[in-house]
Amino acid sequence: MGKIVAAVGLSHAPGAIGFPETAKPDARERTEKATLELGKTLTEAKPDVIFAFLDDHFENFYRNHMPTIAVSIADHHVGPADQWMEPLHIKEKTYFPGNPQVAEHLIKSLVEQGFDVSRTGSIEYGNNLLMPWVLMKADLPNVSIVPIFLNVFTPPLMKYSRAYALGEACRVAAESLPGDTRVAFMCTGGLSHWPPYWNPYQAGDPPEDDFLKLMKEYQTVGKEVLKRVPDLFVQFDEYEIIMAEKNEYPLNSKHPLVNAEWDQKFMDHFCGGDSKWLKELTYEEVEEEAGHGGHEVLNWVALSGAMGGSKADLVLYEPVIEWICGMTYVQFPVPA
Image 1 (cartoon, one colour):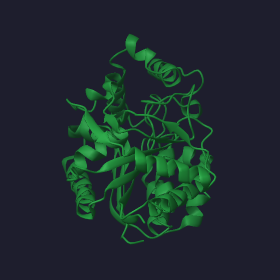
Image 2: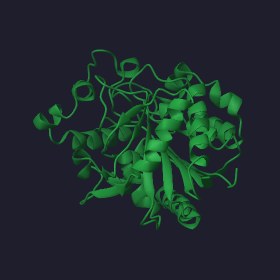
Image 3: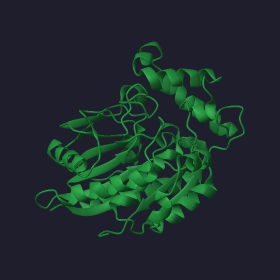
């Protein structure tokens, strides 16, 4: 049977590798140290495969076709997507083994456990995986990654209790793998942030802001927009930097970009193993307190479910306005 050997969670703010110099040096040093610590944890655990709870930033899925849950099955996945190469300052694409046999086992198990999961082929990663992977520097040349995508940007979203149950079901699938497969769980995203993706509840519909109008079109139509605006995600980074300078989303509002108070409350419950509180979170609370980017905590709730609601160790919480994100780093004692 499969063996759980590690579980980590961390933020994936693109600014951490796209414009890292904007952060205060001490904050940048602390986040780099925390990221390396999680990379060391994964390296020492020696997983054969990583089940990664991620969200798609419209690299693969769009408002016209947005699965609530998707498992990607292919020999390899690639990243970053073309539109993220320049913004993330990454010069070459990386091909990540996908282990289709394990992915097939996972999706079969999830369906048998009552989850209607979409199946995709090879996908492109963005900052959801590339930012953590680049900075963790985990020495895992042969590891496979099976991405499990949760919709966080296109309402309606799944209930938080459902995300927790998804994590539990993924644990069942992992432990029922044949042989002595070593499995690590990983989630990325969050915590509170208001990124420059169009959101009807924050930016209006239609949005008044010209850039958010363009993002709404991209989020709906997809890569056809990039043929007309190939530097869209360069503009995205530039918009984030302006947002950070003003601490506003959308621009000319007065909404702060990071809610450290809510983040710390979330981590108290998450690290304390308070599954009841996590499962009772609502869309409305997270939208108001943590922003439309804050729904990435669905990935964290799934990770908590995968680890049976056990307690976790907070490696670092660092609110970094310059990267418009409550940067968070966690690992679980294993076995758990």
